[in-house]
Image 1 (cartoon, rainbow, N blue to C red):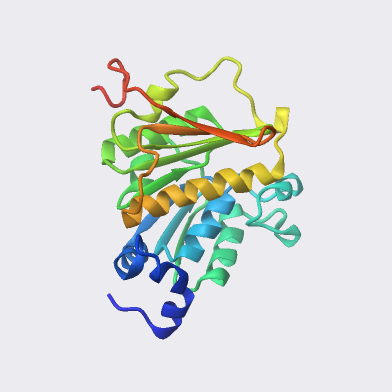
Image 2: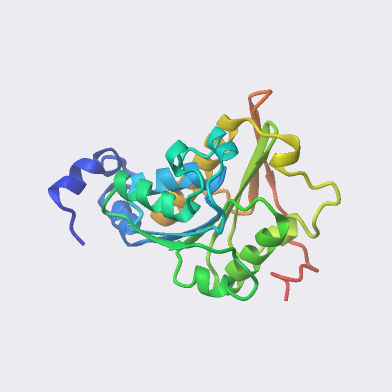
Length: 245
């Protein structure tokens, strides 16, 4: 697959990287990434994946843009309020990079449609804000053998992990925590979404291009208030109902 002169200039900073180069950029161009949620994590992730030249972005989100989203969901602007998120996202991403094909799914991910949503994907990036959806994405990704990049945030802290079979996300969080918090209830600093979303996009790019060492089986924990981060290993659960069966 060759690049047009415009693409060569567009991706020039990738093409000179030894870890990406022409072959890596070609892999990006032919890749399909599924984004589950176009919220705090999905918004910045989508922007960077489109700018990077990922050939196909499939975005699933059944929500509309609200005024309170704009504090952190930088994919949208004031004129997008009350528009379906996927519709507004498609226009913005195609304006950033016309070489990217954006497929929009204006509904929630369910147990019934999860497998079809991720079919044919090279990477799934989960930015959902509820554990039920995260569990569905994880189960479908494990069943399909598709790498999963998971990002989450709240208040001043966030996390990013990569799961490729064992261990899976369910090994990390076996059950919904009884004290699970939501951004609507406890708040979140807007810039944190950019940090975590960009990290998630970077992990997806690494998986596609084969560059570096993805956070496979590991979880990066970021504390925005203390400006510190640490990486912990995720252990496979021998009794996991998803990856141990």
